[in-house]
Image (cartoon, rainbow, N blue to C red; front, top):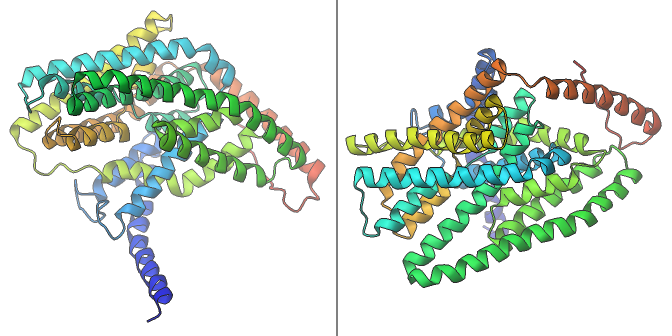
Length: 448
């Protein structure tokens, strides 16, 4: 057989092997998402449950570690979280974001150091010792400090409160939170491998990289913003703008991860913030959300459940996992919520900020994996991290829904209604002006 033909055959085999798992994920995720919506809960809850049911926790019919298709599913899930954060950046109210910037920093700092202290307490309470007591306790604390805001973003989007003061605070604080967590983790690993003195040099390099990335994002952001403004004047409301916007998202995500050592979701969110003041921002967000809703979103949220594996747990690990999960969630609510209250947020908004920062996900898994790989913590800690991710991922959307039902943000609702009406009028005017353009996309906007 010709080598090129053989390569083509192998590619087709791999393609067909991923189709069945993807079909199962889509069907079950959509069905349980509709069930969740009927029960007045965000659909993301149903999608995470779909992953738990299909994954090794229940039936095990979809194995995300399978070498035949697992990598493809994980790659799709990674693209999903990048697009989700890009969409969140596009939906950001930049004026509100700048207004809550200092509050977000304070919330992030408190949201790191309170769980970090709680991690030390749990470590010494259970008497764990893998040979590097202080470093091991620090890694466990860092796992608790990590925040995965993607699930909170989706829940707030479904509830219609992503662009609120609380939503902007959570988004900004979560990004700062993850950067601080990555810095702490890098210092711990370098110190454990090379001695205490090596950490000081590395923290300086890491801080310089972080500052350099944000300087690049701000500097390039002005150029990119005005480039996109020029483009939207020449081709208003066409598919060209979302395509170039998506390219920018992927470029910045790649640059952040590869050259600056910052999570790719930070780069994607920065790309969204750069474009959020465009007249076409809502149109770009709408097109991105179609891809998310139809394909990437269900796979990402189901992957949270698919990655969970509770086999091999014993009584002592279950006890540790239970305390680790409960303390981990409470520490975030207390740390972030109290700091928000100290910054003169209302009691209800402070509680929403605390709950919104409660989710753990890919960042906690990354920290755990790095700690295990470097030999600082024992691999049995994985069994404690999984319940924390599952519980926080499922409870956060539910609790946020309850909180916003009890204390709705009427200012945001009124603004959303007003913006929907303005958007509908703008679409009608643009269509009338450019209806002869063959590349125009007709959008029907439902105004509540």
